[in-house]
Length: 313
Image (tube, rainbow, N blue to C red; front, side, top):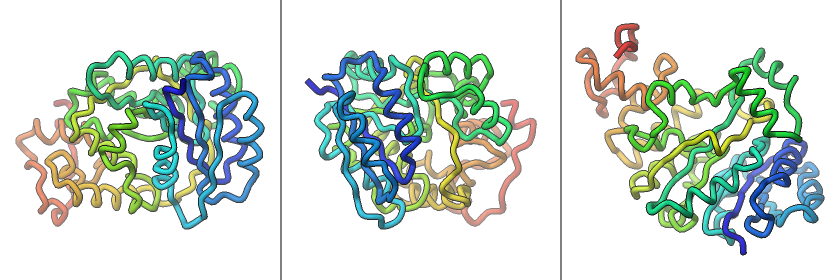
């Protein structure tokens, strides 16, 4: 019986897609317990052929949607709508899972007495040029567990590791755990995703549609967790969007305009002042008498500078 569905949007990344599917073939979770759904967002490469080449190794389906621009949210909605599993794992093309990751995702959901949203651990995401070269020297589509061990030893951690070190790994206690809900590797209950309205398809440029869904899961009392036992690594590749900063800013403004909750009001200060992610920004500003609580007027205020004194709080 299929209990878990893995949904992978893709766009002209057939080699990376092959790597992701190769790692899924090595999962300890029995093949009959999960399915893989690949949604092609209008690509013109051989992704369909690559997907079908795994049909004797995985319970796998392929769907193609017309290219009408960046529609990763739409692709994931299609996959979620047709999924047979009670639990959904979203993966990006080029993310390779540790062999026990799917089994652990399923176990955590089944034993939880409360709906949970799982943030997978992703080694090597968003590395600089030097980090990419170093990572490329050790990665391959096979032996993912050994590669993850090597990446751990070399310190090529999840880009969010600094936040975990600072704020703690119990992210359900964080003021805005939804800010970590990056669909490169996450999972949630299908029923909860549908109840939350799935992905807002108005997000038609890079970023934001996943965090936006995370806000709704958060407001619906899903508990967010992260654990290295659900590990993966991100195969480095060129970014599809040049101006990520502008896309992120536009997404943050849309998210706050939709919900107008106190946590998202801090996006008004710019999502990453001095490279501070949202939860750290909230911690710094709320603990410092020198900074006001965020409010709508902050969109009109000059950008504020976070000092070393503030960072020590």
